[in-house]
Length: 307
Image (tube, rainbow, N blue to C red; front, side, top):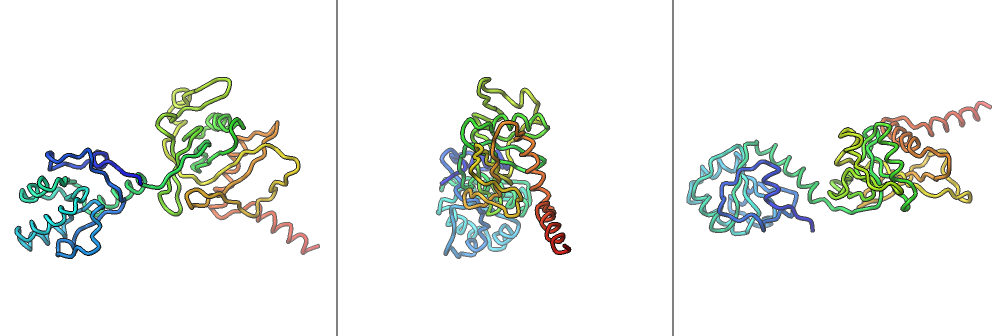
């Protein structure tokens, strides 16, 4: 199970900590969803998911004011007794001193933000989904080609890094070389990034390690990119039949998500960088509704029908 340190969340969301006495080092966030404890403030604790970040908005705060301090203190004490990761008050609302005393007793941090409840909740939920997403590491190169994330895979030494270098020369951006960390942020989206150690570095056999950011400038690199297309490089095999029309898409699966995959045979004289670039543009055309292979197929069948 992946976790996020509460202190990292505080820094990312620019939260104000109202309980500096509470130790934050060992507090981890394990769920991306947040909870607005309206039902819990009304006394209903069945199915209370206490592992989530608890967010107090204008509605919850107004309800507590109407119920009075004694009742509100009792309900807040019950919520904190579940050892929730933290309680966040939105809209820069004033937090009663009685709540702060309860937080110290139970060891639950109380935080505050200036943002509205809806905007804070959506932003926190989006960030946590990425940080807590299932992930794997694979051997490959990830490049941003015309806005499409192209993952280049293949056996070690087949020339993936050289293709990435040529694509950088052609104005595209490197995300990761050698190792790509893939996160599943939704059933439709995979995000690729580079490990901190190898970020912006390219390994070229015979030369060594080069820093793409230092050599080609910041416009040649990118930290994260969605994975839209996979290109698998493989040695040319004259006995194997390769797709020459592209009428049917082939897919590869990562973390349960399917991604369009093309197998590109490598032999002397083929400019693989231009092939990868063309594949990315063609993939983008298909997303916009134009399929060149289908267009040619329709022309051929139409011509046969006329004859």
